[in-house]
View: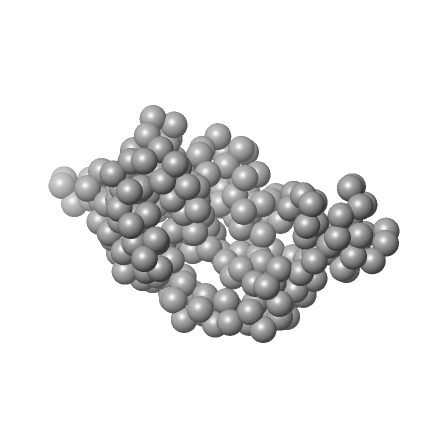
Length: 236
C-alpha cells in the first residue's frame, strides 16, 4: 500500500505513521529522517541539501524529491510505503505523481488526519520538555508531572520550547493552511483522500485509520476491476 499522510502540526502524524507502517509492513518515510540520513551518510544529495541549509536557505523541491524517490526505490519499499511530511505543497505533489508514473506505480490513498485548530494549539502549547533529557515529555493537561515544572523521571526542569508557544503554533498553522492543505484538494480530485478524526486514544485513531485505508483500497480495486471489464466489453 502506498500512502501519503497529511494533517496539521499536532495531529499526531509521527505517532500514527509508526503504528500504521508497522501494521502494514511498509517503511515509514519522513522528510526529517531523509535529510538526517543523507546528511549523516554524506551522500551527494545530502551534501547538496546541507549546502543550502548552512546558508540559511530552504532546500529546493527537486533535492527533496530526489531524496524521496531514492528512498522509495529501496527494496523494503517494493510493496509500498508511507510518506510523512512529503509532499508539502502542490508542486511537490505533482512531482511525486510524475516520479511514481515513471516507475509505473501509483498512490493508493492519502490519509488526512483532521483535528480542530483549538485542539492543535492545546496539544502543542501544553507540552513540557525536560532540560536534562529531552525524551522525557509531559503535558500540562494530558500527562502532567506530579510536581509542577519538575520531571518525574529525573528531577530535571521542565520547560516550554520556543516553537511550542501558542503564537508560534498559530503561525505554523497558517503556513500549513496556505502551503500544505491545498494538496488535499489536489488529491481529492483523484479520488485518493480519506479523512478521519485524529481525536481520541492513539489506538482508536490507528484502528479508524486502518479501517478507512482498507475501505479505500477495496473501493479502488473494485473501480479498477470495473474499468477493466468495461474496456474488455469494448473490445468485443
